[in-house]
Amino acid sequence: MYLLGYDIGSSSVKVCLIEASSGKVVASEFSPKKEMKITAVNPGWAEQNPVDWWINLKLAHEAVMQESGVQAEDIKGIGITWQMHGLIMVDKDQNLLRPSIIWCDSRAVPYGEKAFKDIGEEKCLSHLLNSPGNFTASKLAWVKDNEPALFAKIDKIMLPGDYIAMRLSGEIGITIEGLSEGIFWDFKNNCISEDVINYYGIPKSFFPDIVPTFGIQSTVSAAAAKELGLKEGTPISYRAGDQPNNALSLNVFNPGEIASTAGTSGVVYGVLDELDYDKLSRVNTFAHVNYTEELTRLGVLLCINGTGILNSWLKHNFATSLSSYGDMNDMASLSPIGSKGLSIIPFGNGAERVLENKDTSCSMHGINFNIHSKGDILRAAQEGIVFSYEYGMDIMRNIGMDIQVIRAGNANMFLSSIFRQTLSSVSNATIELYDTDGAVGAARAAGMGIGFYSDSVEAFSSLEKIAVIEPEYEKREQYLEAYTRWKNHLRDII
Image (tube, rainbow, N blue to C red; front, side):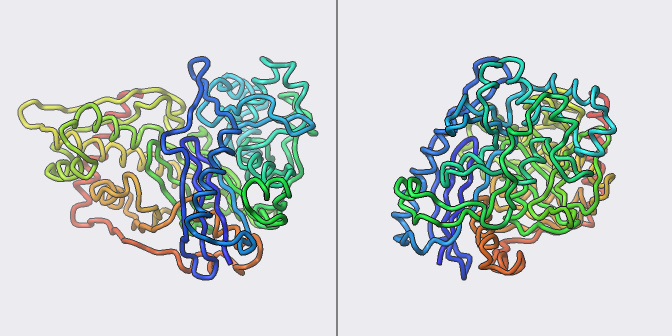
């Protein structure tokens, strides 16, 4: 028997098919090959048409089915993961009312900031575990004020993964994890937040029925079965936002366990077992995939916008003579720990929540024309990205995270020995690299949802560990000296 995983990203949609007993990937594909279009009608806006997600899902799904040769009746469960915080609205006939306002759209920032003050900062943080910020609830408030005729037609709102489940089944549902990432969930009262919906004037009827994260949420309809070549009645048995799902993909379920990614932006995500939050809302807290009213499992999310995008910028604008990131890493490795006193602040991709939404831009400090070379700049960039992680992880430690092991996929900046060794040595944590991704994790989780796997231990028993990186204890003082210098430059800026 086989399990399907769908990963709805903002760049592409990935589909993965695994054999359930072994957990091995049978086939995987993504679409489109070039990044999906993001429309910005005005500065700071970011929208996508959910129909494009569905079209690309079908293309990737068809390729996976053709490559694998698996029969539809042998697929026993479907899991879905998605780009977090997006807003989708449909009318009573399940017709889309407008494009989705996606995660990186910032038009609703003033709405969230005002709600934070008017509802009360302490009440928001203690009940929502976050400021309303620029999340889904605030995006919906923007629609209410700026597109009132459209708002009047809304029957249901949902997140990107809920839309895909609707297209698969004809039914609309939402999870507690989804509600929490939209800042709709009251953790103290275990219900949709009356404070948020009353303040923004959002009818409770807009919310679909709550479905479990793991379990038979709905089944593939006859229409979707025909469109995709699936069997009618196939269970949709798991869904979660991309960062909780990435943690799941790395078998991160329990308090103290940490997952990380380092692509264009970077994330450190840890599990907490008590209601806690950062009073300055520099990190966010959401329901983790295994959160229930009886079992407190929260995901503390640190997001750094300016991470891998700095490395990419250097490749395309500075290190143009080097043909690959591997070549950049080789040149950077010629520079010693601390990059001969050079520090780079990597926050050049907009305002950073970890800096209380300040936009500092990227900057270089300590450059000496007589001693510094291209390799020093390339190393300082990677060190600066790591130091931004450590700066945020200090905040996570202050709200109860014990960071001893960091799990990551063997991809993006974790392919760099400088990046991962610096991260391990500065944080004093062991780094474990695994061969997995979000679509694979969603497929495994679908097996948990149908009860094929008895628990997460069984579901992830075949997860392949590729490498383990330990701190360089004998050189840790050098790493910490470089971090302290970097932090002092940052403090001068902010």
